[in-house]
Length: 421
Image (cartoon, rainbow, N blue to C red; front, side):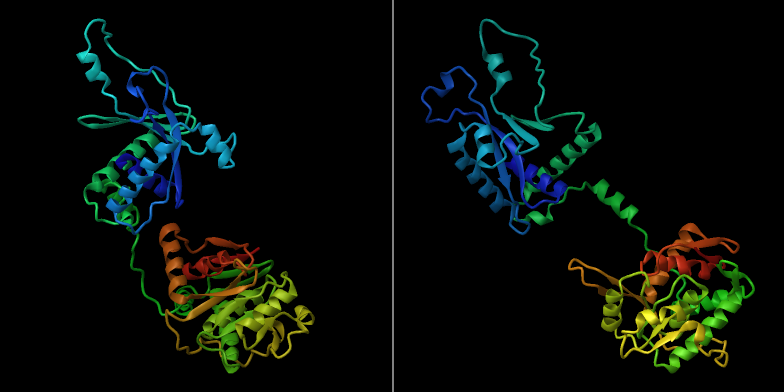
């Protein structure tokens, strides 16, 4: 019962399934069988053991239930396995992949006590019909042999199985602990995982993305920032255009956590629009013009965006967007707006963008990200992969996907150039 319990838990943890199955051999010689011990022949049989170890149940209570299950199973120990497969609707298919064989007959002791003809040395050569078979020898010490098919498991896998099984059995000393508290991992494995996961780092603190980009603008105002076809903008030029749009957006009521819908094709205007919304303190909401209009309209309405930034040639396709002011980026009169950064009252916890995902229902759902989360990602990428001034980053991903976010803003934090595909 102890080994079956430990093996059930191991299978549950490895497979991630609540209910697990394995095979167990039975002797087929119950006490009520007349002359069972004196009858020659193969009585052994294999039966499936099905278990659903409950995470919060105390170990001792569950093991007693498993013992009762095994006792009840003896009524069926002469039932052929193929019949059980048929009853389960699995005719011709294996019900389990692992088998536990219990060798509790004292062979060595019996041979030592025998008189007359003796055989020495005694060797066994066995093969397994299952991917993995455990042979358990119950004696003064518990010994477990693992037999496995090499086309199913590597030796390192089986060694790990044995170590984890042994670790579980050692934890069986405390019968009051809940099953969920039993761990597969050895102390060495736990330390290794903790070492792998020791990734905490403190990056320079910045209140928001616009402030960090502003630092790069001041450091390299004349460096190349944006390339689209034959058009090129320096950091200073791109910043000035985005600042002018940001000032105008603030006059339209854009501020902290206000979503601003942007529907534009790849262009300089698209990059200016995204930066302008962020500099105004808002959160940009990408609406890919290649997506179905009904879907875009639903996202626009659901988001509560006070306006829509788009391009002149896309205005006609939005004629049904009643009640939402639409503005073509090329036609905005921004020349009178200041080229300096507007004042914004935002911090790390404010939204920087919103994306819509389909979710499990197919209906778009909004997901927002904060400045703190985005800056953490971008600073990690810079520390790990390190862009340098003079590098160029290709912006290739549709801007309604989250991968596009780092493509747009990582180069602008490091003095590199953003190249629109």
